[in-house]
Length: 145
Image (cartoon, rainbow, N blue to C red; front, top):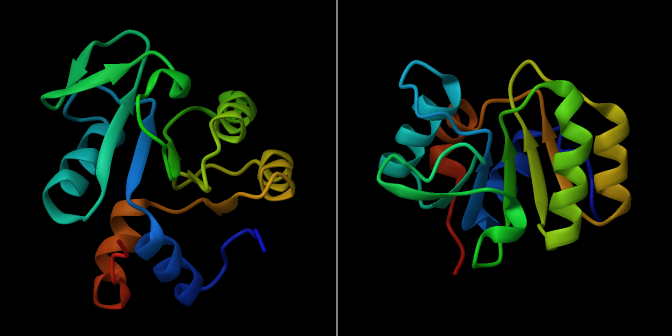
């Protein structure tokens, strides 16, 4: 059953079952949260990261795609680093590509998009930083094959 994630056990389960993460709104500027979080995840998590920003071709020595649909593998989680007004379109794309979950970064909430994602079968984490939660729950995360 898809849901908006609200507990540590649900967060740990979501992070454990996630393998491929698309970071939408990645920046090539080192001082931007999307860049710092992605650098940390590349070094410290079990995730395979895929980057989405139509204005970049590479970032952090990885290819950067113009849209979620351009990524050549199945994405488990879409991690959103975009302003609130962009979230509905990103959620629509996440639903279209068959993602399992959407992570909406710390400080951002879009209840309507979250409910639409849940109704389409996706789990949603909202107003949380994936780096902070991964680091905090590391002992409870057991990556699944």
